[in-house]
Length: 226
Image (cartoon, rainbow, N blue to C red; front, side, top):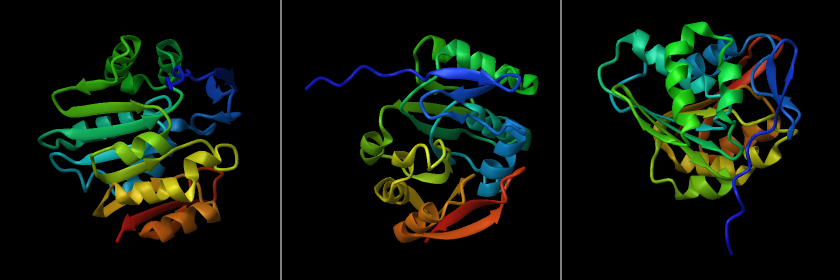
C-alpha cells in the first residue's frame, strides 16, 4: 500500500500574528511570548547551556515553527561550545516556508539563523549540516517514525499540541519510545503538566518533576531518564 501524501500544516493567524493550527485549534507558541517560553521550558528545563558538549543530541516531538531549534542553536553559539550540536525533530504536519518565515519574523534577533532554516525548508531539504549544528527533521507520524530512529537523545523537547487536542502525540506508547531513545541520565522538558502525561513518562522510566510553568501556566514538567 502506498503511503499517503504528506499533509502540510494549516495555519491561521490570531492576536497580532500568532500562528495557530487550524487542525488542532492550538497556537504554535505562547500568546505571552514564544521565545521567553521556549527559554524557560525547553532550554532551562533541560539544564542548558551548562550541559552542552560536542555531539550533544537534542530530539524533539513537534518541530512546528522551528523556534525551539533556533533558540537552542542561538544559545549554543552564545555559550561558545566547541564542536557540533545535533538536533533531530519529528513532525507530521510541516509548515510551508512562507508561514515559517512569518512566524519567525517576530524575533529579529534570530533572523540570521532563521534565514538558514527558511531557505532549506523552501528547498524541501530536511537534513542540514552546518559548521556547528546537524539538523534533521523526520517527517511523518512519530508513532511510526520514532521507533525506527537509530539515535538516542541527551535531551528531549516534548512540544506537541495540547494533550487534550492532540492526544496521539502524548500516548503512553509514544512516551515509552521517548524513553527507549534517551540516554541514561538524559532529560526531557515540556510545557504540559497533565497528570496522564506525567504518569506515562514515569512508567516509561523517567524520574518526573513538576516545576513552575511559564506565564499563566502554573506548572510544567521535566524529568531525567533513570
